[in-house]
Image 1 (cartoon, rainbow, N blue to C red):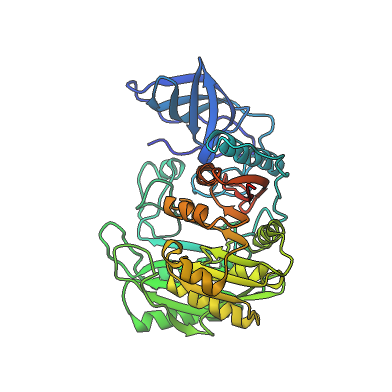
Image 2 (spheres, rainbow, N blue to C red; image 1 turned 60 degrees about the vertical axis):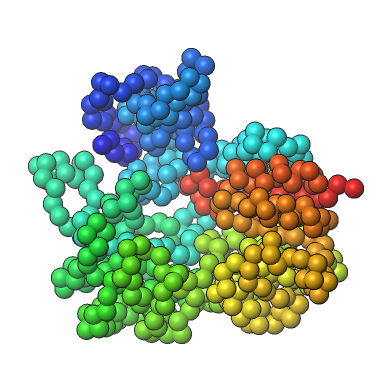
Length: 487
């Protein structure tokens, strides 16, 4: 396998392993832009080429193709002949191997340009919509240490780069790891030393647990054989200063669990809550499991403006609190509330958007499939003395009938914030049936948003478009669209 290259301080080109002769290799390909999902883009002899491998516009590369169609091809960069003059030195030692922060080699201002263009391309090419002038993307004031939650994985065999194997005379030493999964390799975990996605003491927490576990011969999980004790570590660090740690273990071992968690609390006294979760399943999901409180109140509190939100170990919350506040302000502004409107908040989760706009609405109705999230939403509303919001668990298509509207009122504004897959077509049909005067569509995937907007175009026009960058150094982008019903 050819591993993603790493850019060193001198920015010298790196040549990879020999390319198999049966594969097609395109030489001296000039990279010209970016396409969906952060893949670099090039054009050669009328063919569009999508390229993976940490390259950026302005690079000249050789590409080994994995797919080769008449009009397009996909491949991976295997050699860089020359670098873009805009390339900068990545700040993280794990760049090029870890799956996160893939755009570190680009100045942040250039990242924002490509993200803005990505939104425009999706809305125009997929949605084929008539668009107003798009507002300039809202960049993040924090380009490092901006996340409030990370999940790390234990593995009994750390993933090693070619350089590390060569430095060990070609032998592959077996050592445990606590870090991130290597992209496209479900059983490979990269041991992380320093991560720049969260502020301290998150690195201290992770390294303390790993070092203690190694020195006390505690077993790290083997995902292939489904054996081992330590499985996952989830850390949440809030802007309020509260720190919540959830250690996921395969089975109970009280003596070692207590000793490990006591050592962690002694080493990092800033931690406010520690939980542990027993997970004997074959997958890492904990949504059907019950975390147990070891220390503290069992949850953390986060703030958006002056609203306080309770976040449990299974709660969903925007993972960038700073930009989450920016995103919600855009949503509230687009809704144009005067105090007389009934607002329906679809995919409301723990109620954060609905509560955030509640002071300018007559009434907020939140709907979400997951019952536990609705329980959190009701508790969050009570914590913030919001008495004009009600939350309901279930499917919007089933809940929003004539009887429901008669009791709660027809929506003047609908806010929808679906997952990356976008809205189900039945929900789009339901929105067309409801016919609210305004829809504010918040999306973490402009491609599926564009698809849904094309369907809503039967009744609505796009009035405003505002991209918001929530995740610097990645290709991910949030986008808010205001739709108004045609007269």
